[in-house]
Image (cartoon, rainbow, N blue to C red; front, side, top):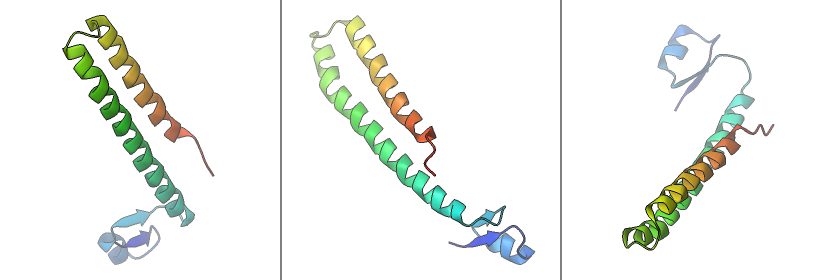
Length: 93
């Protein structure tokens, strides 16, 4: 993996994997931190959705949860996933 700054030579810019448009290399640290937070958030959302579906779907399939209850539960589950993902917008500088 290679990195080049925008004011580098054309050869360096064309052969690099990443091109930084400004002269602030600390943006790489921020990008890495955001990538880690995104991965953690993604795993949390998968765990929540899988856990909910593992519990709720069998109950709904055998009729222990009425269809309207299952629909509300699924909507609330989706809302939890979206709200959890929105936490990524928080700025941590």
